[in-house]
Image 1: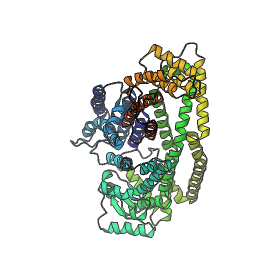
Image 2: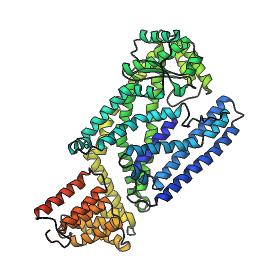
Image 3: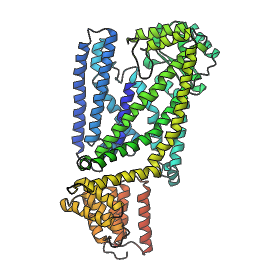
Image 4: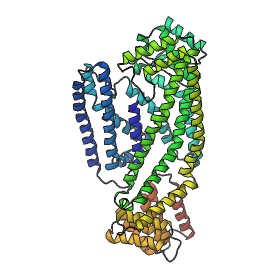
Length: 616
């Protein structure tokens, strides 16, 4: 579970680390840094884990398991730090996007396996030494029968849906693209994808895992009979090959035709038929209490609240820089803001799933335990089976988990309910009240979260905070420099203070004539501002050419095209805009509209003009 958590956090880092417009380092140096990081992780990690294996050799099986589990978590955190360095301090994201731009899902796959390699490399030899085998069976090994396939399958639906989305995005038919890229088009796709995965995902997972139906036997007939007596609709009881070394079971699927109960060989080996019946009653309890639907609701709620969390994190940063403007001039940048947002989103993710999702998981597991009292199974068998699972797994019986109550806690509660059935109704009331409270909270906080992220109220608050930051910057005793000065100039431009913005842009250019951002933004203002006094189309063209020569990026080429157009050079404007379109998304509606605008003006003028402004 912690492995999936680590991967999800790195995923947040990947998508919040905005790639630079122009790489700061060459591809060769970036590859060298990534290679050095991987080698350091592999060699240093292996030496460290071998040392840990030697240190833990004198411990008991239970103590050794807890010791190594802590070490694995520590290693995962170190890999998180390394990946944060990759994406915020190097140009790894830029080159990843460059290589996989047509099909972003391929980039996600590259990222997934690169992350897996970092985790796997440090642990294989150590776990082989610990187990005394020559086969790699580390918990993060690609050849491990447990966590890697489980994690791969956790993200496989995302990869598949993203791949379908990429392929649909390649369809060039414009009416389809307009519908596809619209908010309702994306909403329909997400809704269909969600229900498609929920309905048919279990069947796909079972096939990819290589699960097989339990062989015909008296035990299978006994378990099938129990399921039928309890009114369970299901496709079958199947083996769970990727976790065969662990005594466990699970139920998967919301539709009876594609619902499966999974059991491992380890559980079949240690449990009596009565104990297996108790485990089946537990899994059936999950279905009867509709826990999976509540899990879907929790994930949907998290998605809604994440919008507000991201907005609040950006507001927190603006409030901080408004209070300490001197720090803004030193530390504010796209990279620092990306790192801050990645940190806050990762923190929100951890807090939500650790405390909110984990709370419901623990209580749903207990509710499933208590469902045995509504089944033909014997509650005593559930207690003895839990004790066997604890003993076989090598973990302390009183060890707690964020997603399950400790095994001893579970055993004690079942025995309490055996003595007094009121404990069953007490827990049922607790779960119902928790669900109602969560539903009411989401009903209020969900729309508020969307309003903060996309509504006028959120935009108004954001604008006030931005204004506060720049008002604070004006109070600094020393003049602004660098990106802070450009940010202030952009702010003045957006507020219609053209003379103030021009002064700031020109001050930056006086210190750094090659500053493409300053030249580009000033050129755009001089070419397009509605105040005729502030316009200077000739200077705008000169500045736009300078910026395009320094950094021929799509948005800078668009500024050049606009300046050419404003000066009457329609043919050159069309060529420059076409270059901007070629360097961006081919379906970029803004660049397409600009190109059509320039062509229409050229046709109205009687043909394209040459560089001297004469009719063609």
